[in-house]
Image (cartoon, rainbow, N blue to C red; front, side):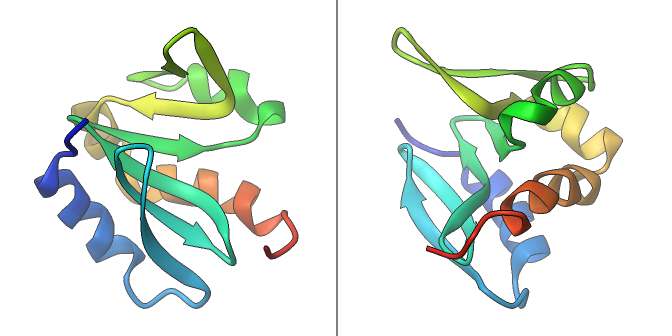
Length: 108
C-alpha cells in the first residue's frame, strides 16, 4: 500500500524536533514513534492515530474517525482519520490525543 506523501509532510512538520520521536516505515506507510511506541502515522489518503483501547470510543466519536482494520483484524486502540476532518478539527489536537497514550507506555 502506498502512503500519501503530502499528508506525511504535514505530519512530519508537526512531529519534527520532538524529543524521543523517530519516523519509521510501518503498516505500508509512515509512522512516528515516541520512545519506540507508535503515536501516529499516514497511510493511503488518511491519518492513523494510536489512541489506546480505553479511549477508543472517545476517538471514534470524533469527526472522520473509524477503526483500523487490516484484512479481517481490527487493530484495537488504533483509528484512521479522514484528512479533511483531521485538518479541520486540528491535526495538532489529534497528535496530542495520541501522544498522551504513547507517553503513558514504557519505552521500548
